[in-house]
Image (cartoon, rainbow, N blue to C red; front, side, top):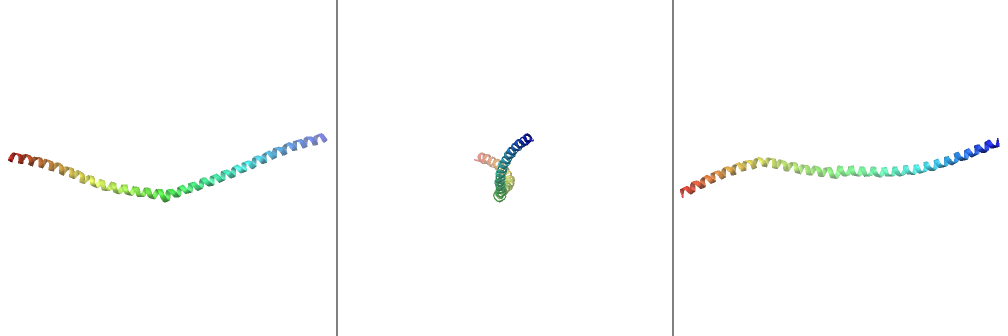
Length: 108
């Protein structure tokens, strides 16, 4: 009976050692989880900061740039029609001036 009790005590001692090792590992895991939670809080803060930056700074600037380019495009689009008309007028004027120059040369 004593032998059995001694073996049982040995087994209990081994189990206690294993439980203590498990408790230490759980404590380490708890610390790591706490560290990860802190890191996640920092990441979430950064994400919120970036979202606010996008909403309050970047998007309004992009809209301003877009408006500027859109209005410039519309002006140039309308100007192209006038430019084509001016080129046609200048071409006609060149022809008339050349013709008149020849006529004046022949007269003199």
